[in-house]
Length: 378
Image (cartoon, helix red, strand yellow):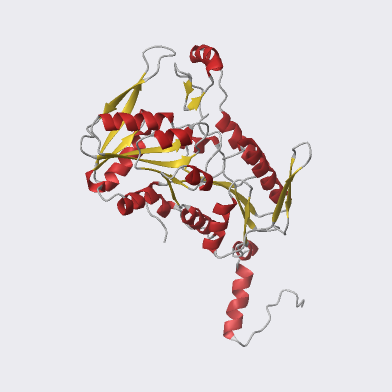
C-alpha cells in the first residue's frame, strides 16, 4: 500500500487543526493578506504640500530627481525601489501647467514599469478642468471662465455659433490612464462629471469642511452672513454651505444683451446689512469676483469676503484684489500661495494637507474616504 496519500499522524490536536486549515485555504488568501508598503513622491509643482502630507503620515518623501535636457525635454529618475509598493505621486496643475502635467505622466509611467503594485496620482488642482465640454463662448470672449485677448475677440464670436472646442479634460483623463495611473485623488473639480471621463476610481475631495471651519473661527458675525455665488453655475456649492451654516444664500446672474457688450450683473437675493461671503471653486484673473464684490456693496452688504478653493491668480488678478473692497480673499493651498500672500496682504490660506494625507492613509489601508466629504480630520 502506497504511503503518499496517507495523512501523517499528529498527536498534537492544535497542530492537526492548523494542518487541516492549511490544506483547505486557497493560496490567494495568503497573498491578499500582504499589503504593499507606501511610497509618496513629489513633483516640482508643489513640494511644500507633499512635505506636509508625508509629515502628517509620519513617513519620508520618496527620492526622485527631475531635470530638463537642453532642448527642455523632461527627465525623471526614481531614486529608490518601488517594486510591489503602493505609490502616491503629488503634483498640482498650477504654474507651468503643461510641463507639470508631462512630468506627472512620466513619473507615473516610470513607477509603473518599475513594477509598482499601484500608482495613485494626487492632483490637488486638476489641470484643464474648465475645458470639460463643447460649449459656445460668451459674447465678451469669456469662454467658460477663460479670458481671451482683444485681438482674438472676432474668432471667439465666430466660435460662439460654430463651436469646435476640444474637451481637454477628457484628453488629460485618457493620458493619465494610459500612463498607468490606477487611482486619482483630487479636490473640488470644476465639474463633478469629470470623474466620468475616467475608467479608474476617482476620489473628488471637497474643501467645504475646511471652509466651514474657517468661517466659524474667523468671521465673528458669521450668523448674520449670506453665502453668495458669483455665477449661476456655483449655486449648488453655496446652497450646501448655507445649509450647513443655517444662513441664507444669494447668487449673481450675468446678463449679456449682445456680443462684445460688457455683462451686466443681476443680484438675486437680499444682502442688505449682512456680511457677504462669495464662494467659488477657482479664481484665475479675478474679474468676476471683483465685479461681484462691488455689486454686493452697492446692494448694502456691510463686508465682503471671498473664499476660493483654487487661487490661480494669473495676469492682473493680484492688482485687482488689491484695488477691490474685500475684507479677505481666502484660498486653500492646493496651489502654492506664498508669493501671492507676499504680493497681496488680503490673501489668506487654508491648509488642506491633512485632508489629502488622510485620503492617502485611508486608500492605502482600504478604508472608506467618505468621512472626509463632511469632516476635517484632526
